[in-house]
Length: 112
Length: 111
Image 1 (cartoon, each protein chain N blue to C red):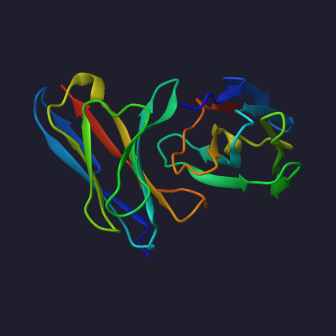
Image 2: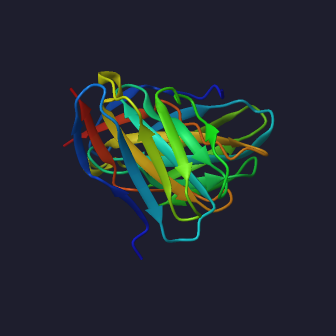
């Protein structure tokens, strides 16, 4: 079973604040790292799939970086808005495995 | 262009009853997954299928069985439902190591 850790567990910020959270995963046998956004009462939606060490991806105000050597990824949200309130999940995908195990997530609440 | 379709959307069972959750995708994806939503634990993998004819256990397989009937369909069966299986169940699929696409979920209550 993969040991995937996400921190913090929850986060409360004010509208306009920038924020970031961490996903830690085993660096051995790495193939890809997935980030998903999961709003309450909806289905999770993919944000990024990252494979290369040093990779950085961006989607609007959300960006992510990847360090495969030390086994972590950061997700950044610039100028948080109330609609960014959601749980953000990460899942590492090891080489040769189709299994996709999620971390427990970071629950973000953005207050107006 | 339906994507991933789950049925039913809601279900109430009594302890000991059995039922099958259905999942179908029309995107020619080779891998399919069943997850359950647990408070404080995010999504936990029950079973997955890397290709037609193969299935493998995930993190929490006890009390469940699966069938990959063909490339399109992946069903999850509860043989004897227990209150601990009250949850929201999500089916997902993907091709290769691409992103997962999720169904809309099945809300199951076991009384």
